[in-house]
Length: 152
Length: 152
DNA sequence: TTTCACGCACTATTTAACGTTACATGAAAC
DNA sequence: GTTTCATGTAACGTTAAATAGTGCGTGAAA
Image 1 (cartoon, chains in turn brown, orange, yellow, blue):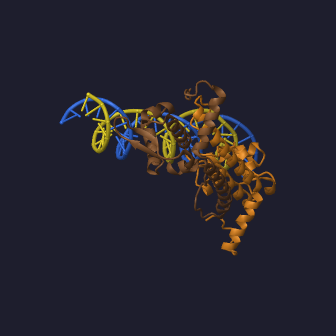
Image 2: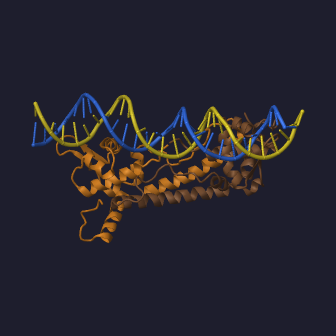
Image 3: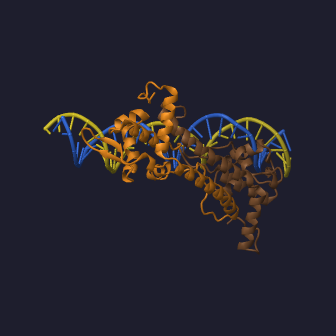
């Protein structure tokens, strides 16, 4: 299948929303992400259900961040979009009768489990506030005079 | 995309070859793996080029393990099949102009890099000899009287 | 010379993410 | 109240990557 870029995409969108301050429509967000507004709604739907963002219909509507950026970790966002598969590899058969394959599965599963645990732990360590701070540093380093043009 | 099960499959096949002692045809191996002989040849081709297995044409031909099981790690096998992608997720854009996305990518890349390094380290720790030993333990635990029927 | 088994190029199928269309719903502007 | 804006969601189309399958060539043993 295609590689999954939902987490990357939704984090990007969330930071743009945070920078904006005012509600952003899914059409605006889709333009920044070079995708379709429906895709934005679909992904942000999970975050809305989890309480991280708020959506409003009609004139002046759109999406806003619901809470404090320091209270949302990348792990929270990962969970909110449905905990997509992390590892690209899997066992050929999950519950094999063949004991050779059982031995292989056991070894692979142990490795995958450790790697997934580490990855999720790293996700938990990073808040949206930290990502926003990193972004501001990059802006300051590049063009101290025009802080508003963050989307090139 | 589909999940990648080549590593799982090839390890399974290698252990069956080791148990057999005599050359096994890709048709026999395909039967044990419930797949197509061409798939077996394709995957084992990489291992042949890396020197881990040997193939012979004609009557009495087939595949044999070339060296000592204790000298082949899961990492070696992973490399021999072409180092397939480990992580199911990727960045939406690799070299974005948008600095928000650069900040997101940096955070995600760091996490993915750590997780991949751990996974490869785990692979390096496990030899085919260890997998074979684990298999024999499972066989002994299940049916001490019929050690030859390892494929159920 | 027939049979067996690998080698390889090429095509088809499958799977899950991603893209798109269509229409319903609700809120603000007029 | 009607129009316009924007989300909500179902249904369908598209695409990328692994896997499956076909066909033909090659070399070795019977």
